[in-house]
Length: 101
Image 1 (cartoon, one colour):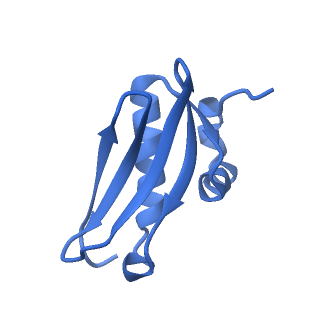
Image 2 (cartoon, rainbow, N blue to C red):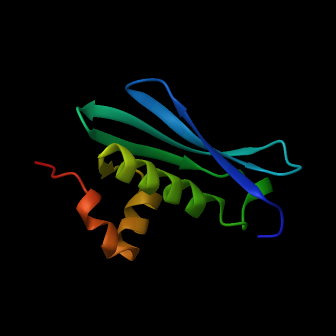
């Protein structure tokens, strides 16, 4: 990753998105989420346009999600295949997995 990447949280109450901006690029990466119960969010979509791919943007978005979940006490349902794969790669995050029926 050569260009700096900044990740911000757009919180609209019961839904929101983490957005990643690569310095000097117009395209943005995005990881969207929605709250389905108090303290339980569904990470439902991760998108990184090809123009900013290969810079670790998706991983940074998930890292931001995990950090925010720890701060807010969220449990996560990884509905997005990328987020689900990251949870499998990081067993140390298992405490953040929401129990699903």
